[in-house]
Length: 532
Image 1 (cartoon, one colour):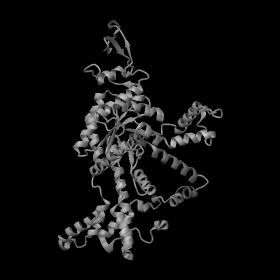
Image 2: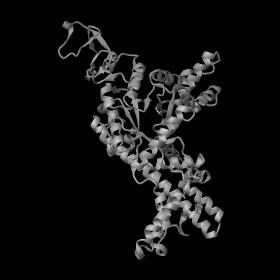
Image 3: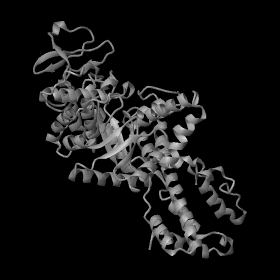
Image 4: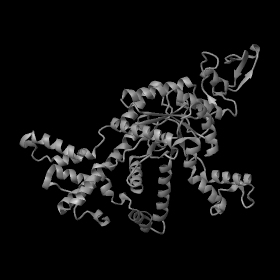
């Protein structure tokens, strides 16, 4: 017996025990509402999606073609439309396709202060609020899709078509939810370990099954693709990793996933000199990367901080800001060290930011990590901060030079030029962009590929195109040809925006609640019927 049938029977039994007061309550309507609201709380979602993510991680370990992907979404509606499109284009399935919540986009688009840089200045609670909003919209997508199936079921029954009724009932019983895992950015924890723990609980209660945390100083946090990043010693970062684990365990999300992001490759500064308990420990290795100069005691100035290194007195180079700098050229080595130590401290996944999207560079660091942690899996930002076209054309150019191919028709420094768009080299580069995710999953053990800010850029691009046409000579045709006609031709659900907003579900509920007295919006005079 399907869950839908069980819910119908359970509701019928309950209604029958209540007497005449419940005579107007329909057992099947109750079952439909329960089916449309599969997830009652954010914790239900977090537990469900954590199990999915763990299964996907195991599948990837066995088969590197089974990497996962996501796009960053800055609003619930954007996340909803993404999943509706995925189901439409990929046989009704959502396998290995997630959501990403970008702290950058929360700062830029969701703060009461207005647009902010990615420096953790936005309200802490706005992150958990976006997690909740995303899942509210995904649950509404479930309810809307199932509502349409219920209407089809009623029509089949009215027509006496038992075969159609059975087929539709099977779709209801085996409905694939729009709810998928989310990797949610908690920045550097927005404070100390206790603040990290409290914020993590909010995010998990809203539905987050995977939290991404970075090893920067919370009050000096910078976007991973900007300069001025300041990292913290392992003891500070690992306390926050443990805070996340405790938050998951306290809330009963035992399979919760932690992604540790190290910004060390592009960070040349630290705010603290690590505590050393014994030679060769984490703190000692962390300090070994500091840029120091050997001095005599007599050379010490008032307020100098000095270290004993191999029996010699050394003074770390300190900037006017009070920050200490690492030696040039140690970024990759520190990144590998920090990644390994984060996994040992309890992280499930690691995230490495790189200067360019090079499979060889990523694989080089991951190979070093995997010498110590063979199954280490990477989350990688396919960042819009990279100029993908220029990077990959230059990589193609360099491959051609190495292979002895003629590159005399190309100016390496000017390969972004439109004059090269239809060239053989550009086609070579585009092919490598196309296979980048599969190649780096195989060669660098990248389990999850994401684009942090894609829908920020698509919103700007589509708005620019519409404004150019609508306010120009095209006038109304700018909207009709550029938007609505494409929606109709491509089967975009939002062309019927009243339905998307929940109008038909509201009509269903009105009928449940008021029967024949229901005043419904979806009648013959509903303009949206033009799109049927």
